[in-house]
Image (cartoon, rainbow, N blue to C red; front, side):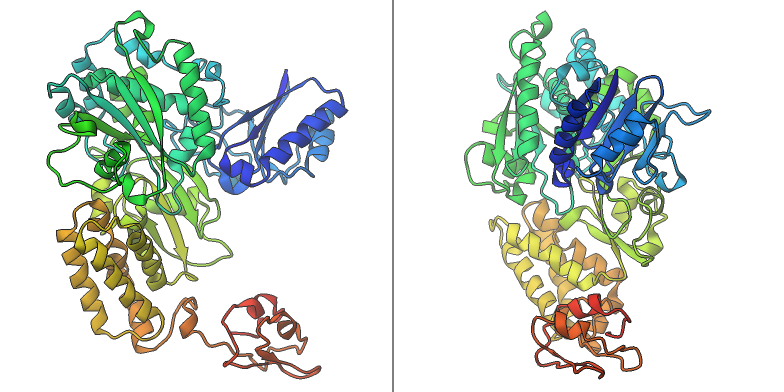
Length: 598
């Protein structure tokens, strides 16, 4: 039977996925077509949503993008009824001539969409390929096969297999997963816990959300593997309440897993019992730190605790606890099924496997990518991401979110692994990758991230609570044109103090965006301070607008568009900008047909 599958993750719905789904349903009924209509989650190409996969029995399989509900009748008429491929929509066609498709690799229909040919999908293997609300789809793709394997092994043997794979925690710190489990396994306790950290709070990051929306059972299966290995009987998923679709998907997955005896008492008659429940977070960024998360789970204010003792020794309710993030857990079933050696063959000697990134910002193809560790940053941004937009020059990438740092374009040839990224002053983090071009002001970027961490500080320790505020005030002065050259030394000294003295990872990494932008883009700071100029033309206080008389065509569009009445214009005369009234909104630049305003 022919089938049409619509991307209905958060990105798809935001682009109009529900309307597209309804339009297809209406057209199928209208034409009395024998076509199965289904839904799936994000395939990673968020910039091309709404996406539909069209499988026509006996002919071809197409992936269409940039669909609206108005496009649907044309697709039904031309593609479904007449067998015509609409090239403005097509992203991929399977199978192309003389090509073999594997589960991990798609072959692009045109060279422009080479965005997935270099990706290796392990964590995202099922996202966009299954209906996350149907456990049968997961079972048809080796779902819960790993559970059947480990239940025939000793817990210590499972930990040994995970250790052989070399997987490190994907939450940001990169601590070896097997080592964390070993610590917890060796502690004698009547109760132990497994926690899935799904409190994804970095601006521009949506890896965990997409995994939970697209393949929730892989996370549950990973938690069961962890629980069996350390001797736990209970697990918690701590997911932020701002992810309603992920929570809905998880709730259904938990119910289906219990009905099929993968959760609960005496799992698959093995004698092992383990169950999982969901706890919703209120959106505090600091609760991404594991001890603050644990405090929140205990119905206390989410504030970090001094370490040691570490959670594997004394965690939730003072019991041994393993905290792993979503991506780490989603890797585990494939490690067990495919063998740890197969997983370890991907990546670098110190950083094994793949890494999922949320590619965002000033890049052509934004969305989710999963690449082998060791791939260069340049390849991810310029080949998989398609490079800059509107022929603008890319100048930096922020890795690790507010806790990370800015890496200049000149260093994009570094491999993506924990050690190489750390040497730049940035961190791998959980997987946020925000690309910036020549229209991005690096001082403003540093101010944005520091403003975020200052607001999200729990306030427990003075270095973070006060230090980040003082640094933010200095950055605001610089952006307003009131900075002093001595401010740069002050920012660096404050950063060192906060890093040394802050209680938790939020405070210790908060200065990273400031330090890396000063290190690699000091000239932009100096332009703001010494020349009272923003090279990227972003900071409002440093902007001055003028009309270039030689380019002005005297059309008056700028004056008619100016909401502050700052532009003086008479018919047949060159426009003039009153700097006293100008609010630097840039609308005039956008409407000027001759680019006469600078």
